[in-house]
Image (cartoon, rainbow, N blue to C red; front, side, top):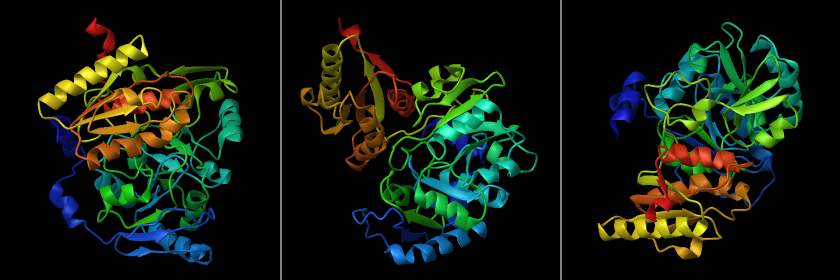
Length: 399
């Protein structure tokens, strides 16, 4: 564990002994609301195999856990989230404890119906309303002025705003309704680890620290929601790129700009983040990851292979994240495909599972190709940069 991570845990009052005392039995449910019989199952202990007839019972049981102040991980169209009653401080604190999440990192509140907004926020302007009409349910989070005492202060991290979204996933919407309250729900992984796109990823990170996991199959988009804040003039600032692209936002908003903080590497000495994902290193594999950029694909491939060969010679187990157009160029212990460079949605779906594959196979030295920051490529590069701690190698320096 790095000194930075140790400081983050100390700030949040999270210690290994406290987590050990919290150990509990994590119930696994399978949910079939999407009528997808091909959804992967698991042989994990206490896993409950569901079918369409049992969905109501499963949702009732999971909803009761949440209503009683417990924590349940559930699928969304982006990644798996770890939910708790957004108005219950004791419940929300369990999220921070299970994840080892820094206390100044705000949480996104998930709702299942627009009527829930009235109790949460002071108001919604015209641009925000048009964005909701276009992209809710969906992978878009809006940072809005919070009503006093509407949610736990732990959710907002002391800010006067709250981040809210309505997920586009039948299981997520049904669970929020069953719980009878909006759910605070960051990604269901240990803080800093790659986000979970399968229930098995959640189990790997959080089993024994949370009350339940709803397995609804693989997540769809694969990266978290886009987080935006809208000015009174209708200008949209992107605080975190995600499943709704800047191009899509520009079709509705007067203007779209990226928050300058997105270009800086986060650190514990930076200001308090206005949304999740702005400050701390996220999504990181256990091995050392670096992104390679250059003027040409050939220069990038040559630089990556030279670095892989040097790492192999010094005893490292090597890994590379590559797009299919170049994947045949590489000799490494672990080679992970991000799909076609022309289809960034493939990279979004594969990224987190690929980072976890490196961990599963024990890779210690990792390199990744970059991609154009257009469409979903902006979200992919944001997550890669976070995972690599903004460490970049320039291929052209070989010349």
